[in-house]
Amino acid sequence: MGRRLGFRALVVGAIALALAGCGERGGRSSTAAADVYPVDEGFVDAGGVLIYYRSFGRGTPLILLHGGPGASHDYLLPHLLPLARHNRLVFLDERGSGRSASLEDPSGYTIENMVEDVEAVRRALGLGKVALLGHSYGGALAQAYALKYQEHLSHLILCSTFASTRKMNGVLDRMRKQMPPALRTRIEAMERSGLYGKGPEYRRGRYTDDYMTAAWGEGYFPYLYRRRPDPNFDPVANGHMSWDLYREMWGSNGEFVIDGNLKSVEYEDRLSSIRVPTLITVGDHDECDPALSRDMHERIAGSKLVVVPESGHMTFVDQPTFFVSAVDSFLHPVSAGEH
Image (cartoon, rainbow, N blue to C red; front, side):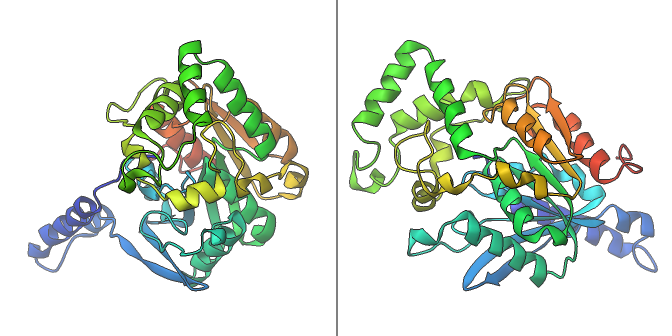
C-alpha cells in the first residue's frame, strides 16, 4: 500500500538540471553532472509477462521489491531516494501490479513465478551480482529469490516481513483479538456476510469501503505508523490495487487470515541455507510482529537485526533517516553517513 509518486516531476527535475548546465561553455561541469540522477525506465519480457522497472542512482545495483501483494513500487518513494547516492536503485512492479502486465488467469500469480520475474530483470539489465531489498510481502519474495538464486546476491535486506504464513496468521489473529470489542464485532460481521459482490456492479470485485476503513484504517493503522503517521493515509484509496492478484495470493476471507496461495510461504527450515550477508529490519510496533524477525535472525547465520524504534510497518516513513542509515551502513560501511 502507499501513495503514488509523481514520476513526471522526478523526470522533469532531472531534465531541468541537465538543461541548466547546457549554457556553460565547454559543457556541464563535473560537479553539476554529479548532482544529476537520470532515470531509466522500461519493461522486461519475463517469459511473456512484461515487468516494469525504474532505475536511477550510481553504484552497485540494489533491486527493491514492494509489498501488497498487489501494490506497486510507488509507496517506497520518495522515502528511499537517499539510497541512490551509493547504489543504482532498481525498482520493479511485480507481475499484475502497478505498471507491469496483468494476467488473464490469476493462477499465474505465485511467489515462484515472481522469483523468475526478478531474475529475468536482473539478467536483462545485465546487473550481475545485486543487493536485494524486500518490504512486507516483498520480503517474502526476496527470501524465495535467495533460496533459489543466492549465487546472484551480494546482500539481502528483509524489511518488516515474515518467513512463515502460519506464524503470520497467528500475528493477525492476535491483532484481531486485541481490537476494541466494537471494532472487532463490526469487522467479523462484515466477514461473515461476505466481503465481495456488494453494492453496485462496478464495486463488487473489491472490499466495501466500510470494510477497508475498518480493517486497514482502524484495525491496521496502529501497526502501520507510530512516530510520523502519514497525514494522507486513506484506507479506501489504498484499495486501488490488483484485486485478482490479491485474492489469489492473500485470499478472499479478509485481512486477518492469509488463506490464498501465500500459504506456501513456509521458509523457516530453509533459512539456514542463506549465506549472503543479511540485514533484517522491523518496527518495534510492526504489523509483522518483531518476533517474526527475531526468528529469521536466529536462523540466518551472521545476519544483523535492527529494530526501528517508534515505528510501525512503514519504518522508512516513521524513521526515514534511521532506516536509510541502517541500510547504507550495511551495504557500504565506509561510505555510510556521507550523504
